[in-house]
Image (cartoon, rainbow, N blue to C red; front, side):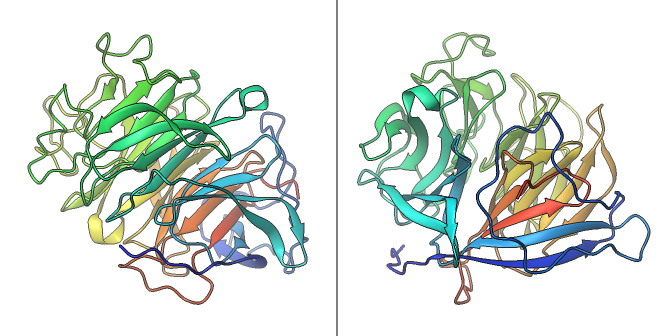
Length: 388
């Protein structure tokens, strides 16, 4: 896939979107459990207004940055700025925390010469060390010509691989990367075969969620000692998150029929290739939700209070789910931004309780407009999000 050379600058524009969801309607400061600060955003140009319909939720939508090139992963630094990977250019961009009249400042923090981008491979997930204030270390998931790897680096330096040999293919390269509440590093990989052989092979790193130390070693307490595998039977895992009860969620996409949102449990098998969507019983775990692929193919996933949200590429929307304490979905998932910004990929919860989402229109299957690709911030009326 050709690497585009266009560069964009940050810009801000604010819209107000009103959705008919079951929630209250008052913006306010984040609660005491929501740590961190927001980037130095300009004041919104359009104020949010309450809907006339009872129970509606208001969502303030702010475009933070424009002109990016297939932004894939988003992770936040302690100063409130974000590090954003670009899949095809192999750049790590720093977005914020400072701004000017045009919006948040966007600068190139690093460019990784080791990355070989093609298909859906390239510079993918990114995670910031929990000890970043002292070790200045970040972790990245990236493709070479022969494999996918996880490496650690200090910005400005070449990555040091901590795990190599994750299967590489034109598609299904996985790429999710995040630190869990237990302090260990989790990665979602892709099966990368037409038969799904690697997802069911306990010796393969393909089609798995992996759990490791920052040295790339199997973490204590993994299902099998000396194995990195936390769960298996996945087709392609591009998104991971945890809710406030430490429950783990993962997206699984590129299956022929359905795109899945799974509640991930230690040592469980999620069925690929024998199951595409609901497994129908037996040893496989059914997804929390499964949508037809054409309406979903979801990437990033994020959690806020009881809400779990996932951003979709083919579906060009965000699904919002209200998940109960026992792990079931309350009511029908709602939709946000359907068709408004095109393909949506990354979705993360920011330190201030807002969501950040990226578009993915600057790729062969996208239809970019002059502002693509974009980073977008969502503030929910009942979520206590947004200190700016």
